[in-house]
Image (cartoon, rainbow, N blue to C red):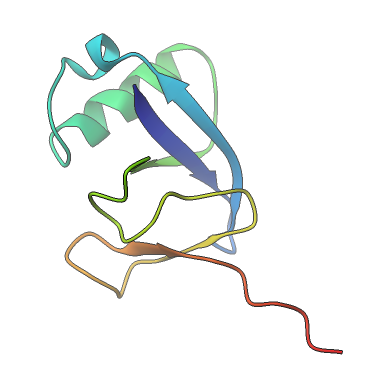
Length: 87
């Protein structure tokens, strides 16, 4: 499976979905990302989608809802967990 995280304008993850590896032509990241984005768009699903790794093989960690994307980290940007609310 290939996993994609939808990020909003604040770069916060609002949804994560899985698509078949065949829908990204069985290519590894980063070549798979634009193909997956095109597949998601072809399903009439809008928004900005970035590939995330369930095994944390790229982009630091697997993105979850509420995580953030920081494009300044790593070679391809990284997902970072939310910080706990301070009392």
